[in-house]
Length: 247
Image (tube, rainbow, N blue to C red):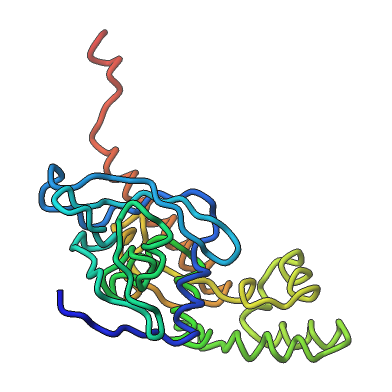
């Protein structure tokens, strides 16, 4: 490969270092190598925040190069972060791999982002907030602004009045109580699949997500449950009780 200088700003680094929080991960089913016989799977260890994460990754049998965990192409081992020294990599060393961008797990920023969307709900929320700023795409409620206003109010009565002036007035008393105690945006908006997982949207990218306030998300979930129930009823029509044939 040609040598390429690769740099990421601190914000992007922090996103990718923090999106995976469990201690053991298996890669989601994305693109597989064209021939499994030309790759071998190894369990790698790398750092994320202050944790050590174990994850399975495919490597080329031909030269031991790491394969991208999204598209399975060979990771360019000449890429490096600006300021890092050139390193002769032996691919059995996790320490050496960690000096590559994305710790040698992805071939590009786009592949890293695509994997993050499929592997981490928090990563989806981070990206979605950057795109839509916490504004509900159905009713238009600015949940980020609401959270900031709730945090500066001191009296519970004022907070309740503010909540009741929005679509969140229909939240349960328990949900409202949680917001009054700690007005987090995670209680105010949800990352909603435009095409639901149950209808084929499970492995979609960020363009299949939208911001919905908790009430609008509840309404969409209720509508989905109704569609699935009606579909199940339709599929069952015309099937008789087998006992009538056994006499």
